[in-house]
Image 1: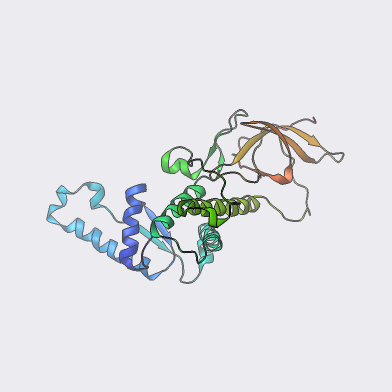
Image 2: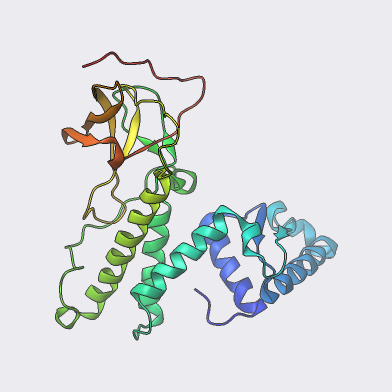
Length: 272
């Protein structure tokens, strides 16, 4: 969170980011004037450090602080691809959830931090092809080497706002944003194009994300297919899935398949 869209405001935010995450080798961004100005000042600062007589007393990492900036064309967010789409999606949910409500900087910063954790909790791929392994790789693994977790909170989405305290309203914002974003994310993962061509059936051992309502923030329902139930035409529309809480039966329309390596093809399953 920054107080204004100026070069100094961006540099302050960048310093906070580096303090938490480490120095990035590259930053991909649009052509906002504050970003362009920041790149110029960072280049000047890097040159200053390298030319100072006291360079020997500065740590090697601090002396080489140059960060490569890559800009997309001005007013062309489509060049940003997936990351611009993710920013757009989250901005829409923030706008719809918080809107014009009065909120303090501390409260907004709390919302941003928890929303950041929600985004970085999304499953990317399975960790292994072991049928008994339900662990997945998430962006959180690249940041803290483990899945991100959240403090348990009561469900507040259905409680009238006039009965909530200020901090309960903040958690209400986070829960509503999580509900909107996770639902959209799972829908985007699931290919909903017309059935104009035949698709491959699910296999036993396939790891899937299960669409489930009312899950708390940072909680994803994961499982592996243990049985398939083909119809009379041989197509699988219902499967049995093993989760950490037991086995459940779901239609394939409620499942999102996590990708796996091409050289780890699951073994085809016989009829059950």
